[in-house]
View 1 (tube, rainbow, N blue to C red):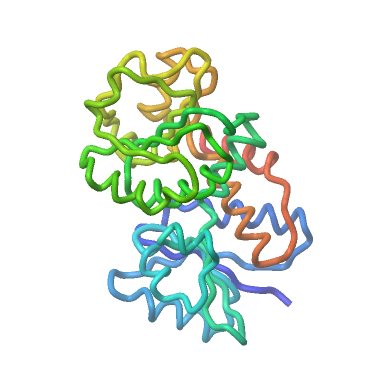
View 2: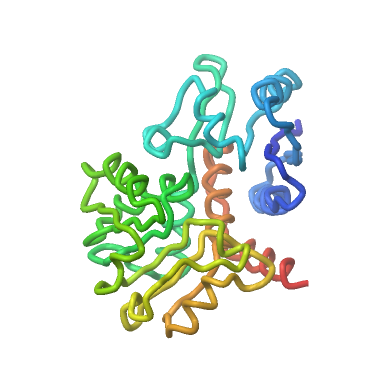
Amino acid sequence: MTEHYAVMGNPITHSKSPFIHARFAAQTGKRLHYSKILVPTGAFPAAVEKFHTKGGKGLNITLPFKREAWELADMRTPRAERAGALNTLWFDPDVGLCGDNTDGCGLVRDLAQNLGVQLAGRDVLILGAGGAARGALGPLLDETPARLMIVNRTESRGRELAALFHEQGRVEACGYADLANTAFDLIINATAASLDSVLPPLPETLLKPGGICYDMMYSQDETVFVRWGRDHDASISVDGLGMLVEQAAESFRIWHGVCPQTDAVIVALRNLEAS
């Protein structure tokens, strides 16, 4: 029997989720149909209910509905509670609508497993204090970096975000002007600005020798932040395509109870983007 899954968002035409989940299904022998659903603003709860009524099993959620999904869920995992947003939903007959956030997990897996980056004991900087940063903070702090700094144009927002996670480890916040005399092993861009070729004011000495730059965004063309990393001699400077696949793999595991292999899917998706 074919099970039905989908990704909801607005816009949604750009989503690579059907491509990814089709390959996971082929790997694992699962029979599923995975589609894209464009949801009008204000219609998200009704869209989720309609999908469930028609027998849908699970959903991935993308912008701008991740926070609304968090509010709608009857049960949220601990990491989803911390993240304040959901990207994975499923229906449990006893519990109701369940939700998780696999974004931060996907980021850490791409860094640690695919790229071989050791996070423990490192100095980590996150650019931005929005939803993407919040979803990443918990899983990053679980890896015990020496310190995790949030930099944001509105410094107070960064400090509010840091306060939510202070019990997990050394997490601080600052403004861009405060970066002049410090350097980091890993710089993560958690803003969408690089997709518009906008780069925040980053000091020339911000990246330690042999440091790493990671853009949580991804694009067919090289992002301006990935280019900045290469120009500043980063040992690794990559976009978030691997994170996209890894977070999808964790959603797949939640739904189906099996972990798909991601390396071949990342290569296939990279080739698709290049074609």
